[in-house]
Every structure is written in structure tokens, then in C-alpha cells.
Amino acid sequence: MAKHPVRTATQKAAFLEAYARSGTAMGAAKLSGVDDRNHYAWLQKSEQYRAQFAIAKERAAQVLEAEARRRACDGYDDPIYYNGVQVGHVRRYSDLLMIFLLKAAKPDVYRDYHSVKVQGTMTSQATITVVHEFRDSQGQVIDSSPVQPALPPVDPNPSE
Image (cartoon, rainbow, N blue to C red; front, side, top):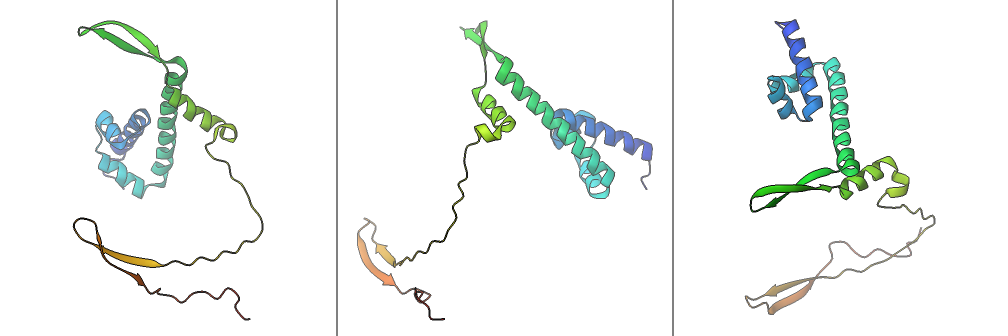
């Protein structure tokens, strides 16, 4: 058992809260003041901590998703400078983030690929000849010779 269970529980809670905000162990360590090595030790030793960490990870993902949605839908202000002085701003939106949000929300409509299922049989035969070429410093072929295959060719009509 830990030497100071109350302090350890407080540290765990602080680290998990910080992780939910920062999304990284390093960021959580900085925000909470808890060494991230403790976090990794707790992950190895405690099933309860692993479950709590899974919740913190999900919360961190939700923070990212909310920010992506804000940038895609609400936009963000990009400053405009003239002679080194900010003279205004322009509202920008992230089309790329919008694409990712749509793909996540409706993958059946916005996915990048479609699968095609083909049923039946197909046979194919190929002959491969490997040729080793040796070239000089100017790129001229000095020697070229076919290499014997390592396996004998497959009989297309094997007798059973």
C-alpha cells in the first residue's frame, strides 16, 4: 500500500484532470506538478486508475473535437499586419477540419474509399526473370545475366 494514500489519491486526481485538459502526459505533469513517471507506474499497477485514465483520455479527445468544430464552423480571427502593426483581422475557417468532422460524423457518406466485394475464382500465372546488371561509373551496362530462379516453376496442371 502507498505510504500516503490521501496524497497519492489527490495526485492521481490532479494528474487526470490535467490530462483531460492538456491531452498529453507531459502537459498533465506540467499542469498538475505530478511527475509523469508516477502516471505510468499507476497505469501498470492499478486497474481502477486505468479506468479513470480512459475517461480522462475521452475527455481530452472531446476537448480536441470541440476545438476542431469551433475552428471549422465558427472560424478564428487571423490578424492582419501593415508595417509591423496589427491593423485588423480576417475571419478564417478550416475546411480541412470540416472534412474530418464530416468523415467522423457520417463515414457512410464522406469516406475516402468504397469496398467492392468480388465473388468467384481466378487463376493467374506469371514468369519472373531476374536480371543482375552491373554498371560502370557512367551508367553503362558492363555485364548482365539472368539469375536462375530459387524455386522450380509451378505446374499449372498438377496431377492429383
